[in-house]
Length: 210
Image (tube, rainbow, N blue to C red; front, side, top):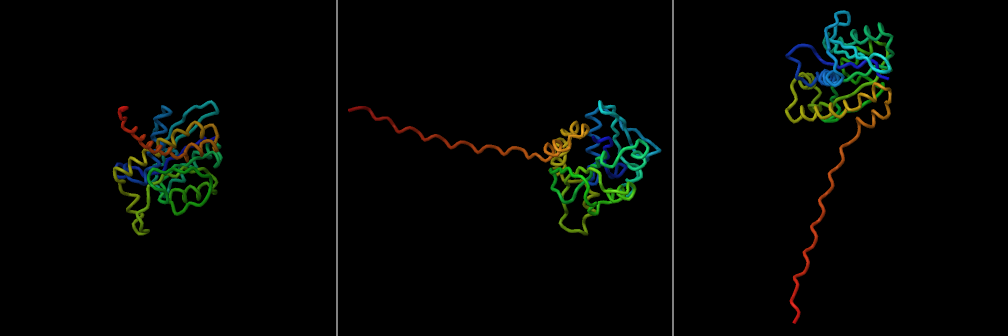
């Protein structure tokens, strides 16, 4: 089961609506869904909430240390409550996915994401779950920093919100540890609309009998 949900982002109003804070957006939505209130926890340098579930307590965490020092909050809480890396889900923005896409994966590289790199450094392993929320790529590597620290367009923001809504529907499965089912639910594509039926040919004009 997932015992610790981590949303990545940067603190402060100037970053609140930027692409890099997509992980915060997801965790805020999860807190709303579970009726939890994130409060400052100085010991973890984070906003945190504890939610009691049938299988045991679940923690929600938003590091307030800025992205490149996210690992301190994650590792400190995980060690105190004896939470294994495989019981952690980190939600973050993903350049390699289009806005509106979300992908669940276990392990793998940090792929240049500073938040994941620091969590790796603090935990000593990359064997934790990630939920990657697509924010798109600017098309030029030199523009990446500016891209993630800017607000998405209204269309992209709406697409990201829909991806958050769809992936959030799998939260009960994630908490229960039904990871295969959660993956299928998150990765499910919306059904394609059926093409309209061709119009029925008009009947031939009736001609009166002679």
